[in-house]
Image (cartoon, rainbow, N blue to C red; front, side):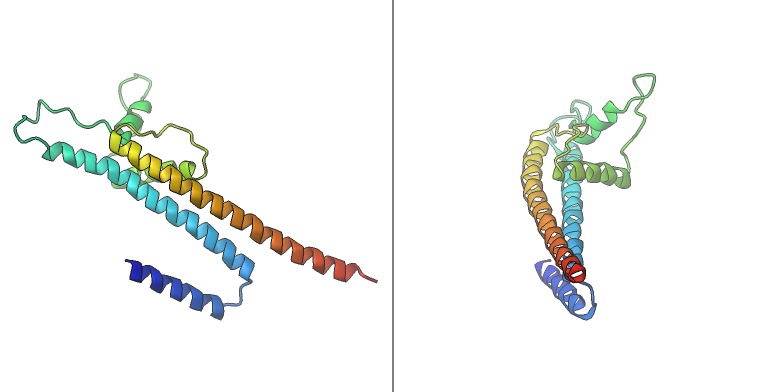
Length: 171
């Protein structure tokens, strides 16, 4: 996988040289791509946490009957429970398809990376808390780096524009 990533980086560098796009615009595209890629990875990890725990319910403790075991209450179950209809019992939204789970996990990843933190999707198990800590930490690092880099890039673009305006305003 690392080899694939290095090939992608090499292709991107080659494309940079061939296409006449200003460096600042390419840098902004890179920063946006970094955030989008981190969102995807975090969403996959968050969704995998719920899926692995659900699969673990089926494979745990052969000596217990399946009726005696309660399923693990994951973030997906908590989210469904928080979206109840008018009767207060029936969930309005079911997250039973991979696409819906991914969308919910992507939403979680975006608000976690940007530190908005609505809190409607929250960890419910020890594993989810551990993953959540890692995602918050890495997300904060990525967001700080990206927002600082975007500000620096925009600032340098503005300096060039100011210098151009001063040159054109000179008598």
